[in-house]
Length: 224
Length: 225
Image (cartoon, rainbow over all chains, first blue to last red; front, side, top):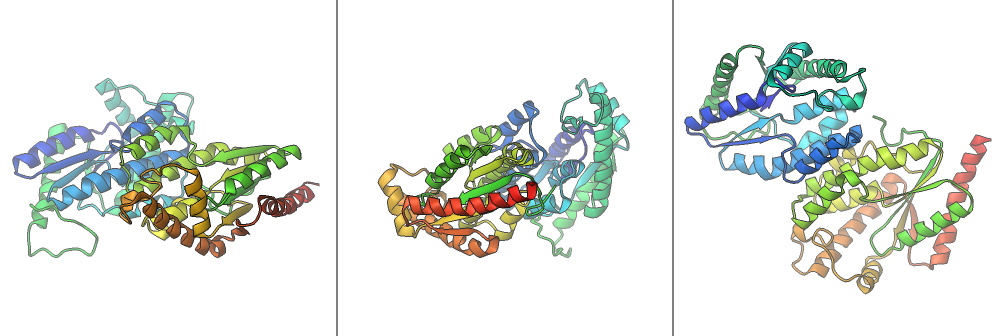
């Protein structure tokens, strides 16, 4: 799982990781938030109108997740694939918490998700750096990435800074709570990619070692 | 997020529950007319009515995309939208909100389809607890007969065809309704549902409903004075 706020380079790194894993002979499934067959389109359309309530949005994300989980991730894992996901339940949980939604409730909803073998958190230390990246990539300030529904500032810029700062705080807390592998995403792409590869290799190679002890968590280990 | 049972609004929420063929919609409609005639501000909230989710639901039903968990969650999404938009605001404004089917429909149906009982209740924890939740109980045979005499064909999910209980549509539907009724019966005590015998005449049931509602509304007026 690759987690991180908007603009840290998740999709870039997932694409790189994927090629690398495939070159090593692994079959890879990659999947991401709001890409489900069931709910992906509906979520995009609903978000366009900017009228989604906080609870509704969370539940829509949850529906999207469960659809991908049951129909894509589980079958792939059973078939021996490595599943690389662009965000997992943690982004959804973070977005919910920042919206004042009961943290126990949101975690219960995702109770049926498998504990991942590893979560790589691409960490950027400040919202301002995120802005720099946003501008570099030529993307614009999106309503939802700026936390527009929360009315945190006079304009999208102020709102973006405040919203992303809050999200970063929540992610840092969750990094401890869930034991993320934290990677400094402010380094160069090549450096980050190399670190990611090393970290992934450690996880995969450990899994394929029959002598390694298996944890008591519900983990389906992809075959190496 | 405020949890079930912890909302406090000036308005009143009354819901009707029951299997298909129990006559609950007829009763609610009569109640609605009566309340309007009595001069109350009344909002009617319908099941599966969120426009944000409607297309997705329709598409999924047509293409058979649902599993029990996603079926449950998508309907919960629809319900959340209704709650945030159509239920809480009017209640805050002091209106009466009427709902045909409520969270107990989801509990009965989703558990019948194999979802974890505790999980589904947890998902709906944000719902407003009704002031009165009527459960119109008709024995299975009565309800099924009423439905069979009126409606032509059952749709895939409606009949529970994805569950593999029976190949025959009508048989599958009966099995499904049976399981749903079992869940409802358990919930009477669990949630304090007001049990009404749905085999009596329409007029008798309506009289009892109005009596119960009047008592509820007197309480509100007394508090307001």
